[in-house]
Amino acid sequence: MSQDNLIKLQCQSCKRIGYWSRKNKKKMERKIELSKFCKWCRKHTTHKEGKK
Image 1 (cartoon, helix red, strand yellow):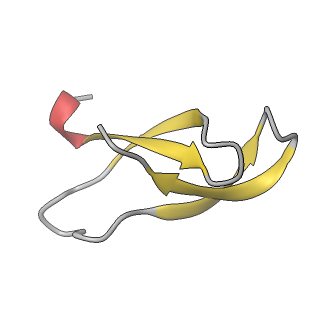
Image 2 (tube, rainbow, N blue to C red):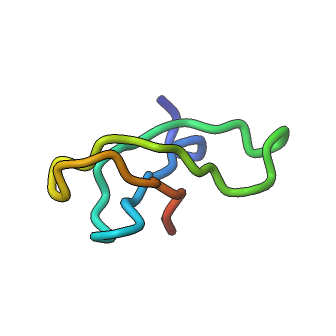
C-alpha cells in the first residue's frame, strides 16, 4: 500500500486507532465514517478518519 493513500480509522468514543484503510483522495473528498468493532470498547462504534 502506498503511504499517501493510507488513512487511520479512529473510534469516536475512546479515540483509539484500531483500523487502517485506503482511500482515493481524488474521488472522495469528505472524511470516511464507518461502523466497526472496537476491541477496547468491546462493541460496535463509529470509526471516523483521523489526522495523519
